Structures are given as structure tokens and as C-alpha cells.
Image (cartoon, rainbow, N blue to C red):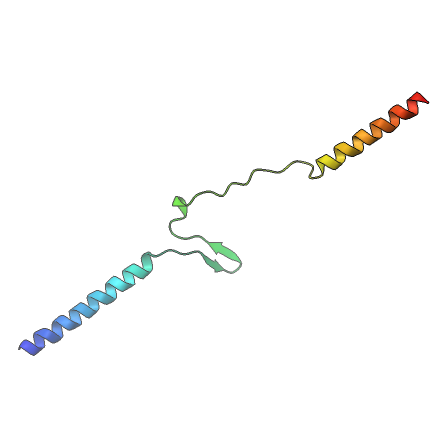
Length: 81
């Protein structure tokens, strides 16, 4: 009878351990790439937002300003002569 109790407890503990392990593994979240999409982790609502401000409307604004200044200078020189 005592051997059966030990076997039953061992079986019960192994079932409880497997259930705990399955619960622990299913509660861990990770980002998964599936079919070209990134599926977020379960705690995606708690993650910080990565905000990147919008860049300038015209990406070469400094060069455009230099070209406009050179054009204005050229026109002012042409008007003088």
C-alpha cells in the first residue's frame, strides 16, 4: 500500500510540474515573425512607443537655400550692370 501511495504522489507531482511548466511557457511573450508580419508580444500595450519626428518637407533644404541665395546674388549683380 505504501508503494502505491509513493507511485501516486510521484505521478501527481509530475502532472502538476508539467502543468506548471506549460503555464509558465505559455505566459512568456515574444515577438514572432510570421508570413512577413511582425506579431507583437502579449504585453505590447505596456511597451514604450518609439516615436520618430517627421523630417523636413524638402530633404535638401540647405542646398536649396544656397541655390536660392546664389540665384538672388546673380540677379542683383545683373541688375547693377
